[in-house]
Each structure stands twice: as structure tokens, then as C-alpha cells.
Length: 265
Image (cartoon, rainbow, N blue to C red; front, side):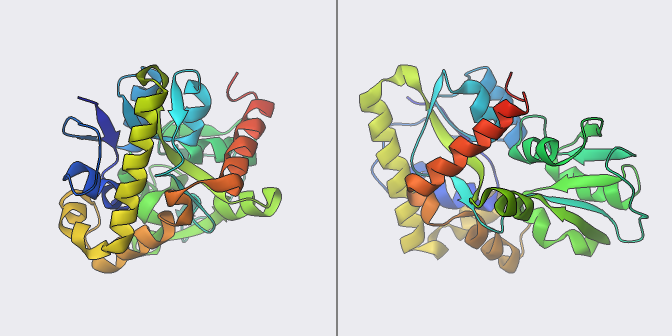
């Protein structure tokens, strides 16, 4: 059986609901492992899983072992990570103070390194711990992802920079956040079957979006229907069905800029 890993975030549970529950055609998978994205990134570096969600930052480091599937990606416009601080915080340069990030190998961290100065002080936290840490004043800035972009104001925080908007304005391309990859040693025939299975699962989700709601709520850190719906609407789109030429161009450009910054060296 094939091993599978993805995050507990609503976009991933929405996408994989049909595949996990045998509601769409698929090869035989073991019960999936759900973990935060940085854990999945580190597992990908160790080639632990056959099929996994990962950040495109991590993908830049494992392209020799994993093949990117055309379906299942989180990529789009207006969906990038946000740099936030306390609402009453006197903003200083990013090289002053500490910035909490949701993982070394996240695309959010990659974008921050492209955007900010080289001498930033970074502290890694699980993404769900970042907003409370900023609100308590334990760190000066927080780099938030996932559903946090819909709730940061509730924590008394303000947005300093939308890194997705910055990326879009400088590149003219959608922001690639994360994708689904399969181990190359599975062989071309099996990878094709897996790719079709992921696409069929995404198509099933689009056809009946309410069918997965219980599975989504079972794993989501945010249970409000409005937050879950906004999260899925933002991160699951036509690129999730097929990256297409524009999606692949965006990923290639992100990886190119990362190499120019020597982040992948």
C-alpha cells in the first residue's frame, strides 16, 4: 500500500476526502498521516512518504526524489502569507526584533527571505502558535499562513505586508504555496494513476462541496463555517485541478528566484 500525508487544513481535507474514503477511483493507500506542513516538508526531505503535500520551498530541495503532480496544488492570487504585528506596535525595520515563521522550509519563509533583509532574526513556531505569540509580545512580527489570514484582526494584530501581493506585483504571476508530489521510484505508470486519483478526488470535492464538511471539521483548528468556506474558496481553485502552463510557470519562476538568492544551494 502507498503511504500518504497531507495537512489537517480545510483545503487539504477537502481535496483528499473522496480519495481517503474510497469515493473516487484510486490505488490502494494506507490510512493517511495528517501533519502540519513543516513536518511534511521535513519528512519529504527524508523521503519518508510515497505521496505527500509539501511547500514549494521544500519541493525545490527534493526535485531529484519527488515528481510534482498536476493536481492538488495550492496556488492562486490573493492567498499569500501575511506579515503581521500588534496593532499598537511601533513598526521598525524587519532586521530589528524577532519574526516568528511557520517553518524553515515553508514557502512563506522563502518569500520572506526574498522580501526582507539578510540579517533578520527568525524563530520557528507551529503556524497556530504564531498569532498568540505576537499578541502576547513574545515576538515582534509573525508570518501567518492558512486560515490565520481570516482571523488575525481578532487577535489585535495588523498586517504589515501581504507577501503574496508583493510577489504578484513583482512577478506578475500567481503565488505557488504547496503541491502534491509522488516518489519518482514508484515508476511512471503508478505516478500517472496517483495523479489521476488526486484529480478525481478534487473533482469530486468540487461537485459536492458539503459532502466533506464533517471530515474537514474533524481536523480543522477553526470550526466556524464561514472561516472554513473562505479558506477552501481561497486555496482550492482551477489550479488545484490542473496547474496548467501558468501554474507551472509560476512554480518555475519561484524556484529560479530561490536559486538566485542561493536559498536552494
